[in-house]
Length: 339
Image 1: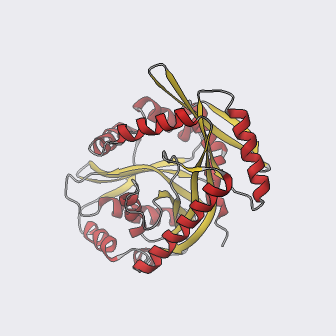
Image 2: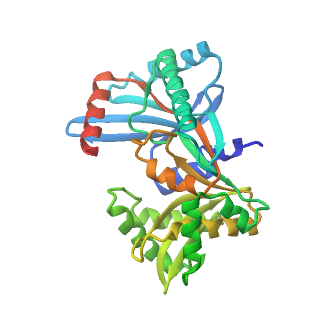
Image 3: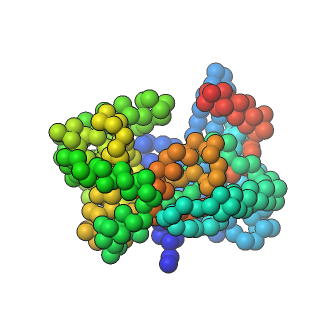
């Protein structure tokens, strides 16, 4: 089965437009590894110091080691001329392994995957003089659900027992699932903000949120899916569309009525809706690397994996250091702020 199509989001016109027109982020294009890539420029000012970072997502690392070294050296030479440039981040999408999430994986299986990842990390860092990104802008795995021609029962059977039980409990409640009307967009944002506030997670500003919705509506590329009880939204997801799939972009789940699985139920219904409308896959995007419980996305990844689907482990993000002094200073500042 060809899974390569799932990566095209990160270098697609949709993502380029969203970053340039909606998020209004500084960006650039560059030729590297025989391809032209879209990238972002991120700048942080702390007192008199300016920290500037470059980032490219969805790069396939070639097999030719000498060629890779020469390309990395070109980047280092060009971008280190500006003393404010601290790093150039490359997100490599080369796959380590892919596997189905259904059932319970053994500790030995998980440990083997973690060891393979650590060996690959050591090789990339030592061979190409790179550093594993301490500020990870793209996680190291994707989680994809194949829903074409699957019945509701078969979709349930992909889930682990805990997730399946939550969905079944939610089915017994008087829950509405559907597409939110425009008059509910504001409420979705407020609920989303309320949910992430307790987790110290940032979301896009409200003005940006509405710019995004207007853009997606004009291009007919999205829907806002919600579940609600007595007209109160208890979970929601923004889903983007391309030819084959629905892509999970943003979402939330409230615990006001208890943790009986509103978000599990929403995803179950979303999978069914996607199948009925001719989609082949649901792409849940980011997950944590397997067997790294300290990863900040470990709990998010556990939820997504509980729904079933396939997990695809990738190389992840690495930094070309352009200014060692500012790099260490920025890393210290970032770690201090996170604590």
